[in-house]
Length: 93
Image 1 (cartoon, rainbow, N blue to C red):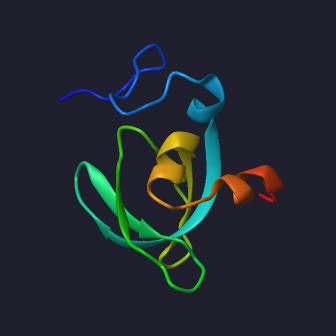
Image 2 (cartoon, rainbow, N blue to C red; image 1 turned 135 degrees about the horizontal axis):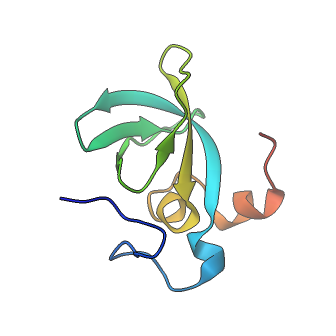
Image 3 (tube, rainbow, N blue to C red; image 1 turned 120 degrees about the vertical axis):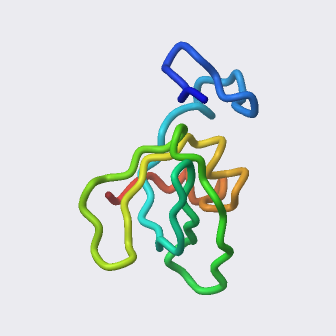
């Protein structure tokens, strides 16, 4: 299995360039596997989701179980890690 390069598109990725742009999120890490990580938002009512490592970037420094990741906007929206309303607020990171 190979990862996705810039010129490749993930099969579920939209064609809209805005949707493909990367977001930086702070998430809680729950589990890790060779090809994916299980994370949740840091707020109340967290829902755990699996993200493929081939599509995200994980910053090397982790504080306990908290990570900073870069994830495509379309994936963050689809998995409920952000909402369109949150997205319009801008980034504080």
